[in-house]
Length: 45
Image (cartoon, one colour):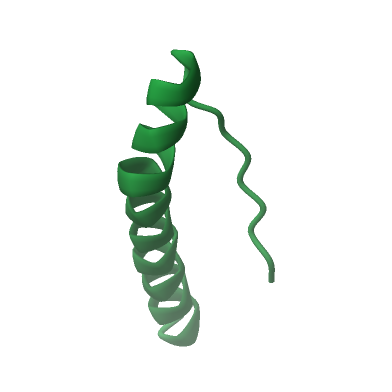
């Protein structure tokens, strides 16, 4: 399974910096956590 997530922060260059420093790491952690939970649920069903 492969997740593809596309997003873009508003506010030009400031949004680009926030996107790279905050949003991308947060979304990676979020998707990793979600996928681990889905895997755990699928394996115990």
